[in-house]
Length: 472
Image (cartoon, rainbow, N blue to C red; front, top):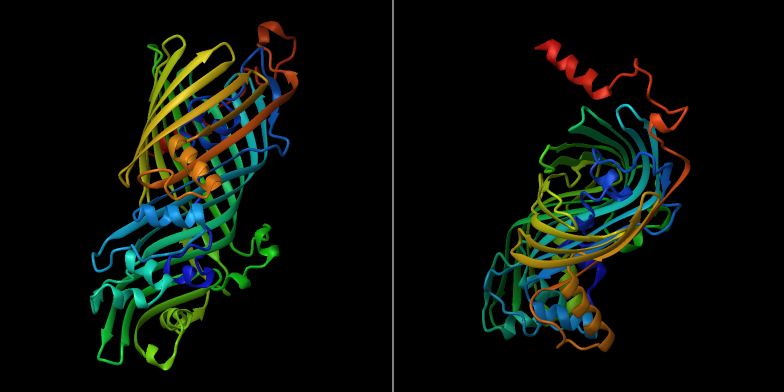
């Protein structure tokens, strides 16, 4: 099985990438939709109650995929065997691994005002995000350095030119939304972050060469590596709890527009933020080479350690800043009786990644099902599905952004059979629940008291826009 210490250096996988998209929940007016897309309404006049929460009940999503060396990974995942003998070397082929998750531990939404449909939100979530592009030679060295001699080649340029980032953090957020007018709405989400783990590796130059009759190995590495910790043993249980030892901040801005024709347009800039990782973190810039002599009786593990030492020997402890995985979203949708199609475009801002998804939602009374074909920027085709039961005061849903791959992955793992499934490896699952409570948010014509019907009440976003207008 993969060696956790070496994987931190060569594949940058201390924690996987996490922040599942859950496209089926966009434009559903669920609590999740309201927190992820802050301009969205989550309360319905005359029907909904004033408060909404998940009451610490499950509200999470996770997904992952690997493109490249599909049979190798299927054998490793389903049968627990790490055997890189079939991985071709010397081809300069890159593989891509992504893993995403987003867990809302606690949520609270409050209906504040009728006049501008103001809503306040408070949430605590744990988010992880990352991606790694890695070489076939990396898989081979984690198996055995003898794989290189067995390939018949003696020189491997760019053998370990891996590039990847993985980070996880707590996110404590305050969100606010209001209607600007009958068609236009704005929303914002401001978050305090507490970093858990961070690893980023960028090897820009590398070489693995077998020399002479002795079988000596020459290795060159150049690049940089930043990490909140180096070894798995350095991560303690207390580091998983929010201490703000690694503080940060992020901002999400969103808007929605509903035309007379019924077309809905939504746009967001999400999780634009930065985390300061503490001064005890590790930073390394390296440009090193070494000659290893396996003839001295070194094991494969010792050879791996000598390669990773080229990085570790250059480590210094100091603070550094890292950007969160910000992204931009765009949605356009229109309802046709029971059928509502939604086209969604999303693109990461600072890191690789993006999707184009078409959500096909079919509704009957309080039930709905969605079919979601999705094209990923890495060249992957996914098909998601979602089921939901939603009333004005209760919602529960379950789905997958990658249904067929998830099903085959589960079947193969249960049967411990690497022959189950074809193509790239992937899996995805999400579920959630939301409950509203308190007094009903009635229309003023139906109630003697109603928050926010004072004529003197003002709009925050109108005041903000007027300030910028005056400055011009």
